[in-house]
Image (cartoon, rainbow, N blue to C red):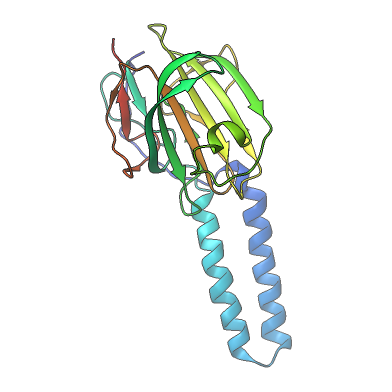
Length: 231
């Protein structure tokens, strides 16, 4: 599914974080005003501003919603990183939920300092979207993929290859948002969803896929090519 690619990048605040950021800013302003006018100890005011200012800055970065476009001529067969973060798993696994065969699993861990918007890893059609309740182990642990709360999006590419993208909640994350809808076409450059706080995304690929990333490599969502599918 090749398409014209725009060489343009924009950044905006994700809609999932607007309420939290507005509330956080109001809290800082109100408490700061109270400390400034009613507490006669200047260092307490400035300590509050510095500490909560830094935390607010981290939150603003966390809730960024970058608009990105992959700069390639043809996206057919390309698999991009669905998230900003670090590659923590590249291995063959038994995928018994949908495929019931061996797949290559590529996992990207997102820390609290990463943007937590998620992108579709391939062009195709959404075949299935399913949410699973579960535990909240640390997201980088192997068992998190199957035991943690997660949301699965199964995508069929134009040539009939099924790709599974799994959004996984971490030890702190308590909300996974998935925008994918069954039966709709999806494309690289479009947002798949959002995960709040530390978490990870797994992509399950065919065994003959060419893996283009290495362990501990940093990824940029919708920009880093993690694999190429055999045409």
